[in-house]
Image (cartoon, rainbow, N blue to C red):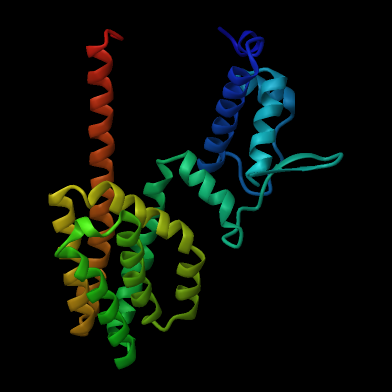
Length: 261
């Protein structure tokens, strides 16, 4: 069934086609095929490339405009919005609609947070270390009875600990960059907590890494702190990938069980 036939069905199914069109354009943006500020191809060209009808394309573009991902200029056409960190809502939507980009964010976290940890161990003042200790102890206090703390609270405490470390780096540009990413970072931290903390093996790994990172900074070991911070973020990223693969295997097995293959 092609898009034109699908659009003859009820409005709800038509909107589903529009959502698919929007997601495919989002994918082109997150892949870097369409860049911020770039004009979108003509409607005819987009319809050819996406294999859809003009009405579905227009509905898809309307969805993207509502999320601030595409802007339309009268008489000039539609453009990819300039997705700066000052406007995080469109980025947050892209991250939630394209889950694989979570891995891209984790790569950025590994680079930025490892450098922040190194600088914190080198430059952190006595006051900075007190704040880091307080944030670590608040986070560690939940380890004794994790069932009494919500996933959101775990994520907030985790994020506060890493933020205290970044502020101890005394690099205003680094602190500002990490702060600009704050909402995106908190999303990834929440995803980690929500997916990993109820798995005993992964939870113990995260708790152990936090403890080692804290100790390396307190002991003024910059190279060790940098390495542990990078290993921490990368191991969380790898755990996400394992869980995703596990879920895909479960879906395939369920489909076979239900006679889909």
